[in-house]
Length: 155
Image (tube, rainbow, N blue to C red; front, side, top):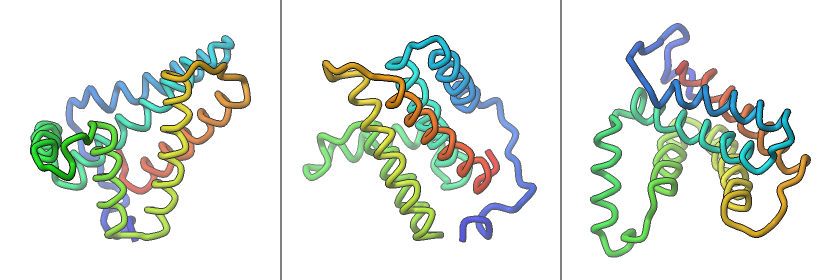
């Protein structure tokens, strides 16, 4: 269970700009949504989660931000994973580490992060309109993921 891994009152205090950016992106997603800017709202909601995941990997899974970049470079040098991108690497690392502690949490994170990532890919790269429902769903998923990450990892 993840709560056994992270003590209830454990907080790591560092000057963490990525964590601050995660909060800012979630606020931006809400403001954009309220102002009918649905596609950029999805983009910001996704990045809020992605940045929070990077913080968990840094703070709790023993791989600081610099080492995350080094691991990605090493993965790209391997034939089987040479086309891996930073998002795939980071999400896979987070989900695989989470799986070691809780299959239930792994399934929640894996499913919802991939759903949110698909919303973001549609928003950023496909020639389709992102409507209120798409944006609202993406924002809801992002908030659920972030709340669970904050609850389980105390970031």
